[in-house]
Length: 389
Ligand SMILES: Cc1ncc(COP(=O)(O)O)c(C=O)c1O
Image 1 (cartoon, rainbow, N blue to C red):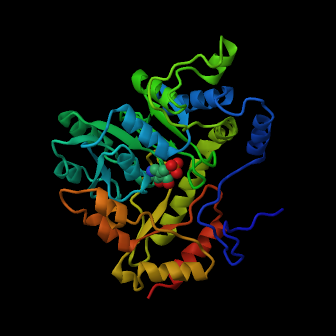
Image 2: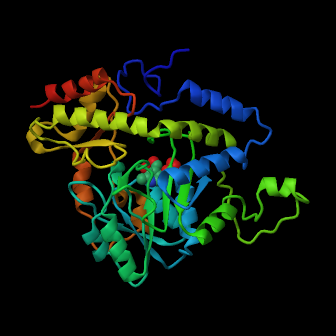
């Protein structure tokens, strides 16, 4: 059966916002994993974790159910608890801050930089207090944040750094992969991401203590793996050291992750080329600001976010409508956290983030996925060109 272009079955859609890249090899790997009698906590997960730790250059990689559980497990492993404050960017997906609330700690919303939309280090400094315990920077859209300065602030103030790398698989600075700068790095394999296991995530760390904790905690706190319990001795004879979770990554998802990993660099290169093409066609349109992405740097090119300035002649919302009428799906990343009821109640700031609030009125994310064609991009580009007033 031929797949429609649109996930929501709108036959008028000509260009989807994202389109996961699932190949015949992926499907064969899933089928093979399904034939195994061990469907979770098995050898395919271990292989996926080894491949991931090799790719990112981290000592340990632990597969988990998604990036939200990776963030939560990182915070619990670092003993973040009630009364503690954790600085997060105001411009991120809600999960970055929800994970902090799950530990009964308080997210503190820092502002972002106008140009890159990454967390502002000046705003981090202005949001420090005697209760601050950690910073969760997000490598927004796949572009590395000012991680060196963030590390400096963290070491001067005795803080942990948990990198939210949900957008940034493949992003490096001087050949060092994101997620290896902080105490942990948390990755998402949700279908909109650069590669997918449908649902799924990974924590990387160089700390044995954190890795041991996460291994146990993702599986109810049980100190032995399923294989250890059944191969050696009595399956029920295990101990539980911590109140754990069920945040496991199963064998089917791990099999998909392994085959997707083989194509990751190629898929990221295709995104990079698509990003270059958008740049070349959009950069000279009055009132359109293309992303400040460096094509020389190793970047995952996860999102392509443009800013619509008054000189363009119509608002961001009007452009969104025009693009939708032309069969093009777009979105906004993100509505700032300060605008959500839960974070107005439970988060705080020492200085209200203003840049993120202003950017929210201007930004729109254009279709971006590895297999996007130039024909599809031209539809987007022409619609933007034709609607300028
Ligand atoms: C920046 C960011 N952090 C965390 C997450 C949560 O990822 P997951 O859906 O795998 O829990 C996402 C997912 O969209 C994200 O974009």
